[in-house]
Length: 113
Length: 115
Image (tube, one colour):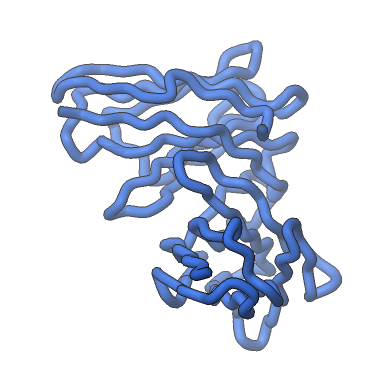
């Protein structure tokens, strides 16, 4: 158990819908990262927050957005969902914003039908 | 730009045999390098990491990796494979600077261990 929690574990929805994925970092970690794992793209960095502020952005679609709240939990919002958004979404956390070990949650598996 | 290449999407070994998973990286700055393991239906677990200093890094479960700057490689090895080592393994590079630690991952290598 990494100490990072993600909810829900599984999500099934339809095209065009909007979903919210939630992540709670390890106690004491200020940085949260979101990654997407799919068969065709592999593991890709989406976005990073540090202590409530966006720190880095990767290949994140405009339909996707995220935020980190004062209690440091983070939410990833995916809207106007397409079939290709079906993937495993991981959250990871670390103490600082830079090159430290990231601890990964168990992931949320999203299926868009 | 940083990148990671894992040679071989599938590796099959017999139980007790040497495990060698290959990783080459590209980085314009001194890299931080990581190996993660993913068991079925689970998240990623850190096996080991290289930051600075000693180039031979020991990790959990008997794995180790050697950073070779001249070859831009960070191959993962284990002297004797166990059935429980069957999983997917990811090599990753941390994209420099103090502002972010975002990881760039390789495509992964699935390790099969035969009895």
